[in-house]
Amino acid sequence: MLDGIRKRSPRAHVVVVSYLRILPASGTCFPQVPFAAGDVPYFDRTSRKLNAELGAQAAKHKASFVNPYPYSYGHDACQPADRKWVEGLFPSSPAAQMHPNAKGMQAVAALSVPTVLFGRFQR
Image (cartoon, rainbow, N blue to C red; front, side):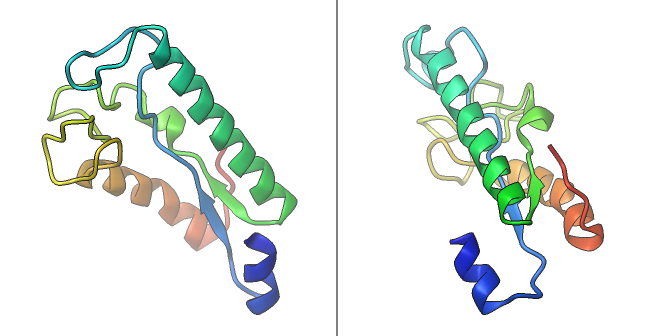
């Protein structure tokens, strides 16, 4: 995909944005996300691996990279409605299940603006 963008728009400033923290690193948060305690760390590790691969591909293709994951600590789907940036399986605000809500997207946008404007890499 990045090669295709570069080919069609060689002067474009490409920014790859990875994922917010969806679940905490450990524990469980039944009933918001009814996964077993052992599954929660697995999903968190998998999302960190996905973000790392997105960062590696961005670097390989000379794209900027924004990683909101470390900034979203304490804002995962298990948090109270006023703190979370990602909704659980039973959303408490308008958003798809296990996807960012408006607060999460505002946070991602705030992290992305410096990269878009100044070409800074965030890891």
